[in-house]
Every structure is written in C-alpha cells, then in structure tokens.
Length: 359
Image 1 (cartoon, rainbow, N blue to C red):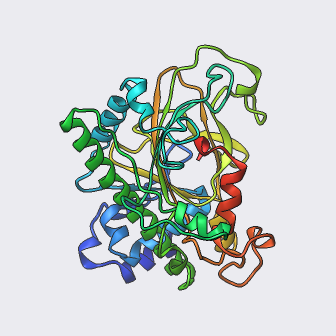
Image 2: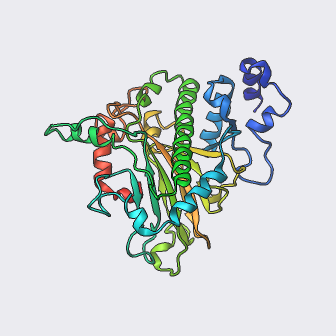
C-alpha cells in the first residue's frame, strides 16, 4: 500500500491530490471481504490518467474485479425503468423483435429479443434477454463461400428497436440504451488501455481497436415457482439463479443494486456488495486472461437465488475479428491458440456451441 501511495504521489495530477482520493480509489479495509476493491472514477479512467493504473491492477490481481464510479450523465434508474417497461410489453409486440430462432419470420439472428426457454420451471438458465450491438446499419451482403467471411458480415448485424406506437417510449428506450452501450464500451476500452500501461503491454489495445461482436444484454430473471435438483450448486449446494461460470472477454456489469452476485474468493463464494446506483463492475474472462499471460484472474462467479424479478445488464467487449488470439503478449501459446489463430475463428465455434440465449 505504501508503494502504491508513493506511485500515486509521483504520477497523479495536482487536481487529484485530494484528502479523500486514496479512500475513493482504495477504501480502508473494514469487516467486508471486498471493502478494498478499487473504485475508479469514470472520467479518470477514460482520460487515461495513469495514476489509477496501479490501483486498478492491484484490485484485479487481488479480487478479480473493480468498480467504475462517478459516471456523469448516466442514470441506472432510467435504464432499469425502461427495462421493466419493455418486458411488460405484450408478447406479440416483443415477438416482432425476437431473434430468428424464436420467430422464423424475422431476419435478425443475433440482435434483438431472446425469450426464455419453454421449460421455465426446470431449467437453471431461465432468463429473458434483449441483445444490443454496436451496429445500426450494415453494408451489402457478402457473396462468398468462406465461412469466416460470412460470419464477419453476420457480426455486423444491425440492432432492432421497439416500435410500439408509443413514440415517447420508443425514442427514450433507443436513446437510453444507445448511450448506455457507448458508456460501457468506453469503460471496456479504457480498462484495456490501463492494463496495457500497467503491465507494459503496448500492443494489447490494438487487439480491441474494433468490436464487431461486442454485446450488451438486458436481462430479466423472472421469479421461479418450482425448485429442482439442477438448480443447486455442485460446489456448495447453494440454490442458484445463474450457473457458476467464468466469462470469456471483458465484462462490464450493472446489477441495479440487486442482491445475488457472488464471486469465488479464496475457495469460498462471497457476496459482492453494491456500491451505489450509478456504478459498474468490471472483470475479465478466460480469453483475455490468457492474452495477458494469466497475470490477472478470470473470476468464477454466480447469482444466488432471489425471491424477486431480477434485472441486470451485461456488456461484453471482445477482441476485433482479425485479432491474433493464439499468442499472449509475451508470445506464449494461449489455450485458444491450440485451435485458433484469430478471434473470428473462436467466435464461430463459440456461437455454434451455445444457444445465443445464453450470450
């Protein structure tokens, strides 16, 4: 801690040297396991203020995540309200936005509404999802027999937005979540830049220069009325709402102060505390962890069962389509590199191995 404080004094801008700065970036440890997780101000992260780098890196190494706070012109309450309004729409209205697997009459394969599975009482993964991506338009179709070239085109699928006849809702929903997407993408890219500076990996940000298949999912986990054996953790028997898992890429998460998120820390699942309404949780997945030589853990996490409709937003930032994921920043063969060279090859198999509903 003393070393990090010295670094701060050397590199922090004069305006940042306020009495409460250390408390904000690195709160004093109290009784909570995660009280020491770094809280990084949004503007300092986006402005590439290097004084945050050691705090962010140490938080990631020790806990596997950090918070982004003080996000200007952002309202989690507004997003939450629009999500509730959307999921309260009639099913036939939402069906107009459903992905092709659920409504064959629609053209959208990835972006749009993914209703829950039919066996709503028995599956652990029962949730509804509305998927938003970075594209609003797409160029002419690709005439090619090459699978990757077709996928490159598919990855640019434009978003679909509600057209309910209520112009106020339609306009507000679209503008709110377009802005929310940009905020989260900014966080993901700025995080990559910070990690690159802290680890002296100057080539890392170039892998994320484009984000053809980044995705933001508006998730609703409806109340469950039945319990069966596949809803319990194999790790400790806890009743779960979301399976224990490790992500793949960079994750920016909004929980809207909902309880339930737990992270595996020192071989025990611990509750992740909320930090205020307008904040985000950031962690990385296995693919990114390998790219940075496994110097930061990809944390295993889950959501414990709750007795209310639970809403959250997950944003995933992956490498660009042509990014070389076969080697780490120091040239070591990655796990993905045993089979793939570029991210596009990996995403092809990833999408083929899971239902998009889970993405």
